[in-house]
Image (spheres, rainbow, N blue to C red):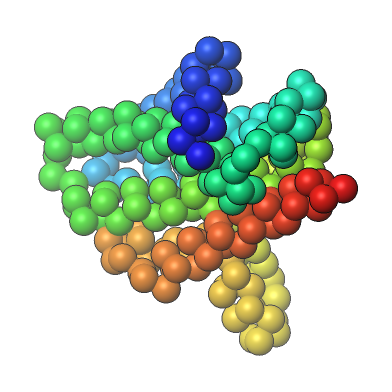
Length: 234
């Protein structure tokens, strides 16, 4: 497992993929941060994170689109399927590599908050809560992107499909303002990724939402393993 993890991390930095993701992420985050805090002279970061979540819809697929699709395209998938490791180890190694790059980039972008501390008095509980919430959402999005990448050998198809699915999941919360059916609204509110993030924006660690995000991640990692179980036996 660790060998595949190192291989994936090396691949991110021996190809343009990792650098492109980090550059676009930091540029987008910097622009959003400047627009929502510095230009309006505000220490409230909730709007910054809400817009960044929308940016995740495009940013995360850049990170996950090559995870399995590239293996198919380069004909190295059979080597992985016949390697003496479990499929869970394979999938988790690729997931942890993508998460490591994502988390490192988020950590670098968090340096933006130093300016708030220097020139203002931000609510650090809210900053921490929003950051933790966005990391959990990132975990969930990475797992979804990896699953969709495992279904195709075309990286562009994997990216576009992931963008569509993530966009649909985020927009579920918007349907609550349109629907009149109370039961349906409650169901949508329960499964909505955006709705479950609201408590984090107030600096509250919502344990049930954290479990939801981690469970969603586990489900899509399990589905990815099932895809490769089917291929291995085929």
